[in-house]
Image (cartoon, rainbow, N blue to C red):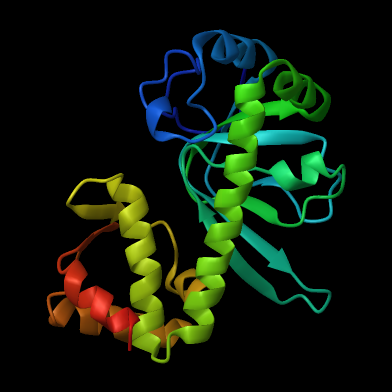
Length: 241
C-alpha cells in the first residue's frame, strides 16, 4: 500500500523484499518470507521536509521504519525548551519502545528532508514479531542500539571539555553514519547551525565560528549543503580534548 503526501518523489523501492540496502539495516535484514509479510502489513508513506511524523505525547498506535531520508528526534519540556536527541538514519525504527510499552511517544519525529517511511500499526507489528522470531530479535537489537547511541550522546556532552570537541563529535557521528563503512565521510548537511548547536550543547554563533575554523584548518570541506570530513584523524584528537 502506498500513500503519497504532497512531496517530491523519493528514490526508494516500495518493497522491503526488493530493497538493495536491507543488508545494511538492522531491523530490515530479514528472510524473504518475513519481508513479504512486512510488505503486506506495512503502509509506505512519503513525507515532505520539515513535517512531523508524530509528536511527543501522542498515543503510540504505530511503528515507523525509516526507508530513506533523515528524521530529527527531539523532546520539549513543559517550559517550551526543546532538545534534539538524535538524527535518525535510513533503517532506524521510530517509536519502537513506545509501541512495545503501549505508552505515548516520548519524542517528536520531524523530517529534515523528503522521507519515505514504512508504517506498521501496533497490533499488526506485535503479531508480526510473534510470527517471526527473527523480527523480534532484530527489534531487541534495535532497542539495544538506541540505548548505546543514547549513552554515547550523553558521554559526548558530559566528557568533551571543549566546544570544538563537542562539535567535532557530532560531525564525526554524521560522517560515519553516512559513510556506511566507506573511507570517505561525505554527507548532506540538513541541519541548521542552531540545530547542530542543540545537538552539541553549543550556541548557534559558536557553531558558525567553529565551522569556519574547521574549514580554514582543512578539517572539513563544505560545498553548498554537502560536507566532507577531510581529516578524520585530527577530528578524533579534538574529541579527546
